[in-house]
Length: 100
Image: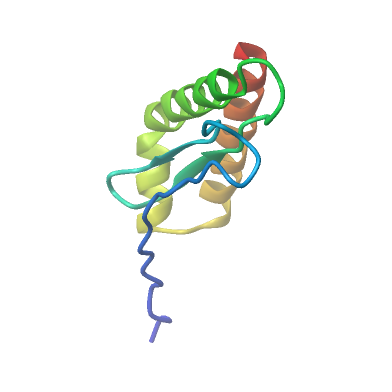
């Protein structure tokens, strides 16, 4: 008998903290609940909230484009699919870094 699947429940909440006047964090929760993205704003740096938002948007675009790979891996978590997802995430982070 295969082990039971783990179910993930997630929600989003950010806070400005005790030092900042505004929140610079950005996040995204996949509507299917498969993954989430968090970008911590660069507090004290110019436009930290813009940078974190751009990073989340770019990574969201990349992961949504890779939705077939994500869904296939969720249905059948094999090593080949894991390697594909690692590559998707590495590429997404690189694109986000370049965009910012």
